[in-house]
Length: 422
Image 1 (tube, rainbow, N blue to C red):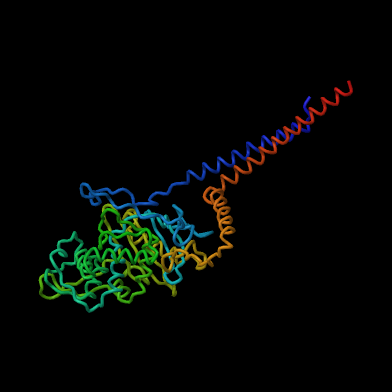
Image 2: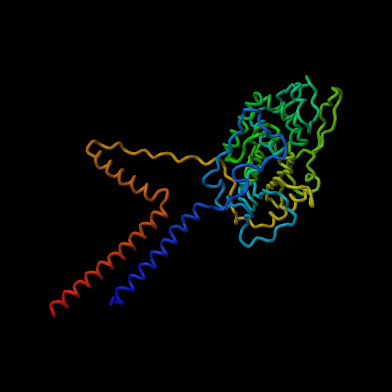
């Protein structure tokens, strides 16, 4: 008859093996099947032909997704990102990506799918305007040509051969979202390819790694991408340029008439300048693929906030009213309890620390050390959890085998003792 003293440890060991196996392989399965986020890599599929590539051409590959969400871990979440004990959100916010942030401290107060990739429509003009404000003097002259006037409108009404100041064009770009103006300014920046390179280089420098401009105006094109986080980041940086901040809050200017005689009024189409107290200006946009987009700022009691809405709908509440509701909500949130942060530049790769060159006497020791470290890194670097669990599983199995051997030896000793007595 088998001893109870041996059966109990064996049973415990088997139970431990089963539990550890479940933990190891269950954890591995969970790790291999992370929850998916819509639009983490690319905007939603296009609904029209605006992003079709020419026959034989390939569309641009999606932008890489950073291993760590820019601005903080919580900003990588797919749904609502709110501080603890936040009050109820306003109803009827239709945007598929939105964000509220403090323009001065950079604190992100709240958001929805902050890094989800969407199309910008005309809010991309904020990035173009920032490059213009950075590189071109306000008094520089730009002569319009036929390519400018042939753009898909909305258009200001440039006249071929007429000359305009950069200041006039920057105002018209931000006040009335002129696509003809965007094209003219892009040419003044060295041509469209040069302007697009400068826009994308500036976005990368800021840390707007979800953003890729393909057109200077924000019209849909293959590979166009941005996010609510990026738009807030870009708007915050642009507002540091006085020419930009002045233009986006200007309500009305007299602009040279398309006829070449006299002027015509250009009125800012951002209704919040008149309807929302403390408005600092903003830019809206729409395309069939992007749907409705908006970015704007406001100030209240010395606190400046930026709000971004992407892929929103005008019903049941207009986008400007949704923006106003979110700004009211943001001003009610306390400072100092952020869910993330608008970064002050792209994260830099860590520089390798210089190490002293080993002497010939140290080579053997260094090689042995590196070999051991390499083996450990392979075992525990990329798959540390499952490997560690498997190692524990092996220890339990060894313990179980040890108990079996011990029991067998005890049984043999008992049979030998019985034979000696007989």
